Image (cartoon, rainbow, N blue to C red; front, top):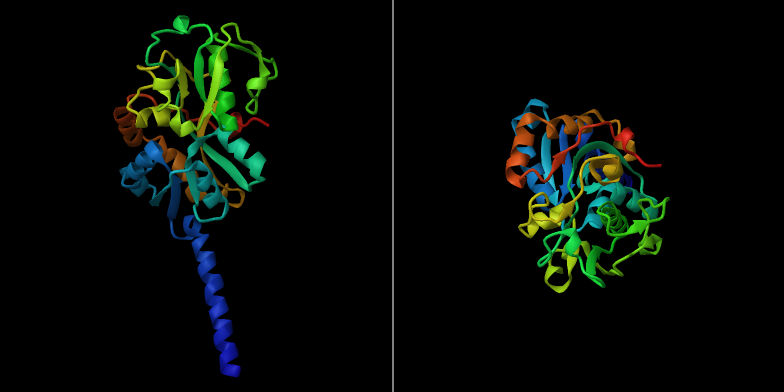
Length: 280
């Protein structure tokens, strides 16, 4: 019985130590597990093999996902050390709705959301009673509406924020009908609508360049700060020195040259303290 108790205790200690090791990759082993998707995963796979990462003494493992919700959940659960795929507004919406224990630690880039059309060549050509597809998740719905406002297509309430909805439209002079669709389907919806609001990652997957192919797209300014992409980790890890190195690695000349060449200038680098863009 005594031997059995000792064996059982040893097993429990082993499990505890193993769990601690899983959650301490970034701090003890110089290994960082990054969760990402689509073109962002492509970037981080390049970074994992980059000279910049080697010089920083960081080993990066990239885990790819198809769903942003899963990436945030895996980060919140400690399965991932950090994630790289989302805008600030998407992150804040997730934290608010899930009461998640996550923190933004660095800025990376702005991917312009654009207005695309199969048949229209300019904003002026948008007809009366046009059907326009917009992403149906709250953060990107609000973002799409801000794009349309800035393009002069609609008017929104003065206090419209990152959680605004179609109900906050004040003026819709062309009586546009908005068609909510899954964000990943906004490019596929183009043949069925007059225009579609498409995020850059989805546009890239569809062979579209937000700078060249859209009839209107976002620019980096005060109004688009909530759309800047960020690196996210658990709150308990936000001061981790190895994770802090990721921003410098991402913005290194080597990595930025790869991104510019690979994505045609559609991932506009933004390097500023994350505290400057946080919206409370």
